[in-house]
Structure formats: C-alpha cells, structure tokens
Image 1 (cartoon, rainbow, N blue to C red):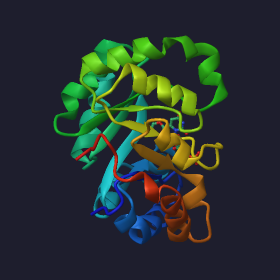
Image 2: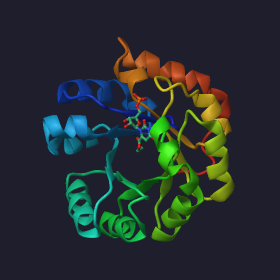
Image 3: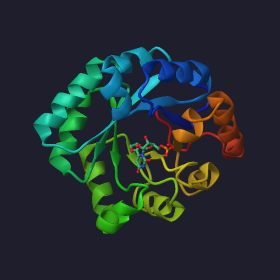
Image 4: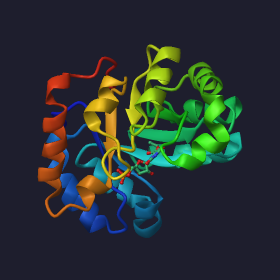
Length: 221
Ligand code: O7E
C-alpha cells in the first residue's frame, strides 16, 4: 500500500475524480490520504470508501462537539471505511474520549496546536494541557504545526511516545526536513501536491528532501 512511511497527502479538492486521480498516481509513495470537508461536502461520505481503495484514509473532521455528536460522526466515518479520524482536543477530554471509544480499531489523532497565527493568539498557552488531555483520552497521535519547529520541539518534550503528524509544510512555509528534525514523524501536505501540474513529481521532490531522515521513530500501523 505505502512505500514512503512519512508522507500524508491532504486531498483538499472538491472534485472526487481529481482526488482519485491524485490518489492513484501517488498511492505507492505515501502513507495515507487525508480528506477534509471540501471533498466530503461536495462528493459525499462515499468519497471515503472510494479513496480507501488506494490506501489509508484519514478523515480530517476536526471534531469539536459534545460527546454524543462526536460519536455519531466517528461511527459514520468508520462505517465508510476510514482508517483514521482527527479530533480537536480543546473540546475537552470527555468529547475526545467519545471519539476514541467509537473509533474502535480506527486511529484517532488530536490537534494540540495549529499552524495558522490565530491559534497561538488564543490557544498558545494551552499546549501542555491539550497534550495531557490527548494522552489520557488514549489517542494514537498528535497534530502539531510543521511550520513552527520550536513548537514541534516543545510537543516532543512533553510527549515522547505518540507520533506527531505535522501540516503547514510548503504552502504555509514549513520545510519538511526541518519539521522532521524538530520531532515530526509524519508530514501532511496539501496544495504543494494537489495544486501542482504533476502531483506525483511534486510529492517525489518532497520525499527527496527528507530522504536522509530515515523512517519515523514512532510508527503508525
Ligand atoms: O497548507 P496545505 O495546502 O499543505 O494543507 C494543509 C492541510 O493540513 C489542510 O488540510 C489543513 O486543513 C490541515 N491543517 C493545517 O493546515 N494546519 C493545522 O494546524 C492542522 C491541519 C490539519 O490537518 O489538522 C488535522 C491534521
């Protein structure tokens, strides 16, 4: 399914045919595909099962609701064939626990710090608390900002075991190698790949950049 263990491609497109094209061209060089609201709102939940034919699908729904609603969404993503789901941790431990419980064998990743400036304005001081909530809820990995190596280092200081998945690479200014050197195990990349004329070639260029880094220290299976 996947040769490169570090790259997760964000398929933030509306058009399922385009997402399928990119997935079929890159399935052998990435670890997983991430789908977000643009694709699912336009193409329906069936996009998850369609893309699952090419590899692992992570539903980036950034769940941030009461436990019952989080459970309903997680159940639906699981029945559609998702391999993983992303939740906010800032919504509280009870809501995050509901996601972990209904995910069953599906992986759960929680956001502990975001890559856009507005996050640090409001939430910057909550990092250790959000990591602690994530850990006790039993998530499988953390989402941290690939364009802020200092924050990634802090996350790694607080949490030694869980893998870190880092968006913010390329279009948001982050360097894949610097993110990995700062503690990220996986990088999440969208526009630099899906907006390119040749998504496979762009993905390969990113992989070249990190080829010396070796496999992730903390591996997701
Ligand atoms: O900037 P791009 O085009 O490479 O896309 C980045 C993707 O990562 C996009 O889907 C966006 O929603 C997501 N993302 C961030 O950019 N910043 C964050 O802090 C968190 C995420 C994210 O994916 O969260 C869950 C993994």
